[in-house]
Image 1 (spheres, one colour):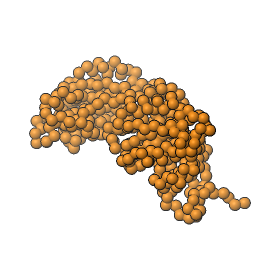
Image 2 (image 1 turned 120 degrees about the vertical axis):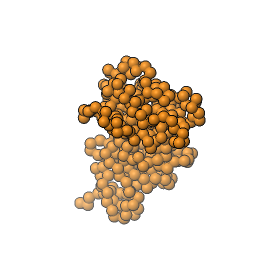
Image 3 (image 1 turned 30 degrees about the vertical axis):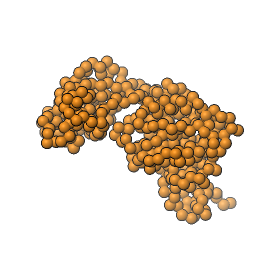
Image 4 (image 1 turned 90 degrees about the horizontal axis):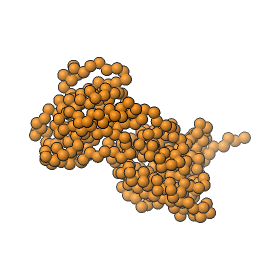
Length: 388
C-alpha cells in the first residue's frame, strides 16, 4: 500500500498541527522508519508483543485495550507498522497514503503517548506477496508493539533453559554485551558463517547472538547465513577427545528463532565442555568444508579456554574473524586466538577493540594485543620479550 520512497514525505499540515513534545519524546514527523519488504508479515518468535489491528485502508485501531492491559508494567522498545504494498504500480494508487500514515500514527498516540518515547525503533513493513485487493484485505495491517518489563534481571551465568528464554525474549539482559557490540560495529559483515562455542561459560554470549539476530533478521536478512554450535565432544571424557574427532558440533538454520533456540537447548543437554580446552578448530574446519554460500567466518570463542586442537591451524586456509568473550580488566588475550586470527589472515575483536590488518604486518613490525606485545619474525607472530 505504500511506496517506500514516499513514507518520509509528510504533509506540511502535519508539522503545523503537531503539539510540542518534551526532550524525552519525539514528534510524529521525527519518526525515522526503517523500511523492510517481506512477502507476508509474521509475528516474531520469543517476543512479548501486542498486535493492534487496523482495517485495510483505514486507521481506527481495533482493541486498544490489549496494550493498556500491559502498559503500566512494561516499556516499548520497537514498533512495526505493517502495510501492504498494493498496488505495486504507483500510477494505480487511489488512497492518500501520506494522510493515512498520519492518521494511523495519530490514532496510535491517542492510546498511549509513550509510543513516541525516544529510543524506540520504528519499522515499516511492506507486504509484497498479494496480487489482488481482495487478497490484500485478508492480510494483517496495523501496529505490532514489542515490549519488555520495566524491571529486568541481569544474568551473568546462564544455567537453565529458562535463563536462555529470558535473555532471548528480553525478560533479562546479559551482564556482558561483547557479541552485540562487535556485531553492531560491523554492519559490513554479510553472509556470515557464525561458529559458536556453546559450553557452559559461553551461554550468555550465545543468547546475545540470538537476540541480536532476532532484532535484525527481517531488516537485514543477509547478515547471517549459517550458525554452528560446538560443545567440545558432548559428554566425552578428556581422554576420549581425539584431535579433529572430538565432535559435539551442531548446525542450525538461521531463519527461525524457535529452531535456533531449540538447537541451543539440545546442545546444552548433550554436553557443556567438561574440561577447559575446546575444539574450536575442528568446528571451524568442519563447518567451512561442509557449508556453502558464506562470505565471512566468525568464531565466537571463550578467552579463558585454550584451543584443544591448535595443531590443526595449519589446515586452515580461510580468514577467520575471532570475537573473543570474557576479556577481563587486565586485558589478557589468549594467545591461541591471536594465532588463529594472524595465521588465517583474519581479525580479532573484543567488546572494546577491533584488531585488524594482521595479515599486512611485515618482518620486524610490532603490535600490542591486549596486555602483550608481539612482533613479526620469519612470517610468524611472536610474543615480544625484553632483552636483559
